[in-house]
Image (cartoon, rainbow, N blue to C red; front, top):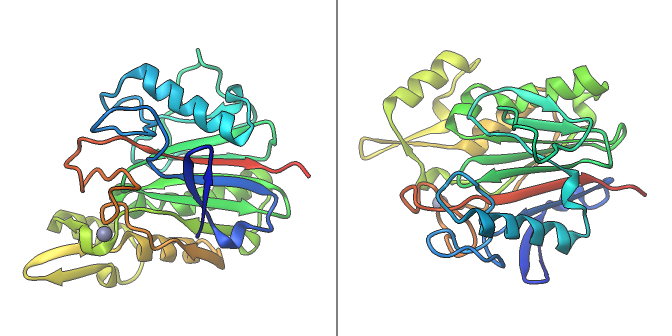
Length: 262
Ligand SMILES: [Zn+2]
C-alpha cells in the first residue's frame, strides 16, 4: 500500500487501485480530536466516545478530501452477510440499514465503513464504475460476505467478477488472532473444501488467518485481481485501532471510497 499525509490525516491506498476511477482511503487513527482510549480519529459512534468528537472526526475526513459530508452512505455493521446497494446518500435522520457490505455506482455517493481488526474488503469494477466495501471479521468471513458483495455487484450492476479489483485492508494478522475451537467448527461447516490451512495450531492454541480465508472467498467468487495490505492492526497500535489488541477499549478507523468523476 502507499502511505499519504494530508492535513494531518495519515492514510493508505492500494497500489493496484491507482489507475482505477476511484478515490479511496484507509485512514489510520491519527489526526483526530478524540481523547484516550479513542485517540484520535475515531469514527465509531457506539464505542463510548464523545459524539461531538466523532462528528468532528467525520467532518475532518470529508473536508480534507474535499467531499461534502452529506454525500455519505454508511450502515450499522452487524457481522452478517447482507449487502446494500446505495443509490443516494443516507440522510442524517434516516436510520442505518443493518448490513456488512455497501455498493454504489453513483459518483454522488461516498461509501464509509468502520473497522478495528475486522477485514476491510474494497471492491472496484473499473469498467462499469461500481465500488463497494465489505466488513469481514471471523463471522463475516465464514459467512463469505466478500462473495455476497461480488454476487450483488453482478446482480445489481452487471459486474463480471474477473474484471473486479479487490483490496484486503489492514486488519488483525494470524499471529495476533487466537480463536476458540468453535470457530474452527463453524468454518468447517460453512466453507467448501478444506479450511484447516486457515488455522494454525501452536502450543494447543488455534490462530485464524483472516487474510488467507478472505482471499480464498474472493477467488471462489471469481475475482482475480487481489491485493493484500499485510498490515496488522494489533501489531501497530500507534496507527490502528485494534479491538483485540486494546481489550475492547478502543475506537474505529475509517474506510472511505468514492467513484472518481473524470
Ligand atoms: Zn499482528
